[in-house]
Image (cartoon, rainbow, N blue to C red; front, side):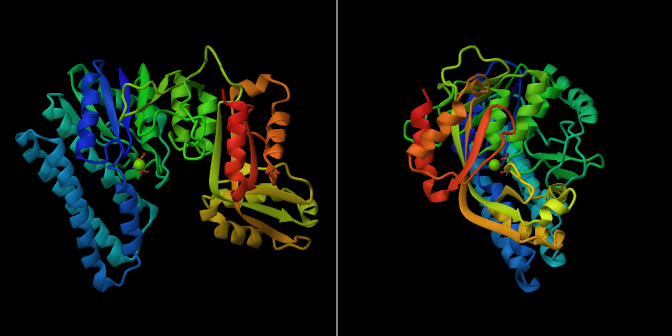
Length: 462
Ligand code: ASP
Ligand code: MG
């Protein structure tokens, strides 16, 4: 049994969904299919919810109706293009309209109550995948595949109630997923399951966080001990670097789980960083493949790799970050200040992608640009004590990371990396402690970042 997951751009519209259905049909092994929302739909749902919550009551309904029409047209067109079998179409269209009516009422609720909790946001965004699975089911059935669509929760997944970024409860999910999906597979059916969307123990809708469909796929793979998890996307695999920066960038043939996790974490947007762990603990190979070029090989992620060509396999770049430095002698005199700062940020859902070595009188770390203002406020409130000179902010910076398991056993790599950077005339603002032995990260000015990436790719990628 294998898991095949298709991302938003692979199921972007009717013709693309037909393409996906063909890939599924041509795969002869028993399989479960996991899909994202139609490309761009989750963003649209987030945007409309964020918009209506602030609108004057008088215009809420008009705005919601405009949105309703747009999203209805998008899904009806996709359905009509992807489902030539009229009987199947006439069964699925009313289901789509029923969901859209629920979505409309939910959005009116958000607008009139002027309240958008993470729980409401999960409810609203869940419609993206709940709609897309119906279209994919229809396309498959039109080709004679016995497909059934289910939400992640219907498929047996149970999460905690951390709305917006819910965590799976493995002990409960594993048993339930097996109980639901194995009989379907035995009966020759192909389950088509919503990525990203799940439910808590009271069957209330939760989501696994943006980009979470990959995570759904690898969790299901883990629970069902699948032979393989395939992540179908719109690029040819995980690349040696961003091809928009370096034309010679190419897909990486194989990666270890740890390398893949670091790459996902440090900016290669192809897979979600959380999705590696469930595959890794069960030793399930993960393939990243291009749905627009199914014949090309893609990237294989496994535990042990046979032959490693380059010590460094990939150079990533993370933009839209800011560097914060907390300074002052108070740092040395206040116990556990770093702990306090990180827990206050963490408690407010601010992620810290990177921390540099700290000294007793200062502490530097990176936050995402979108979190910057809130982070500075929180820190200033937390440390109003004497002896702090405040928080220094440096914007317009990028984090560059080189990743490769071969670095762990090879001497002098860091020196070579940094001399390559200095030869390219780029100044390094900060160096991070690698979160594993397989990466080195550092911060440069945005305006230097492309130069640095090009130089590193040229020097290290074979
Ligand atoms: N549709 C969700 C999102 O765009 C989940 C996913 O695509 O993985 O974040
Ligand atoms: Mg998506």
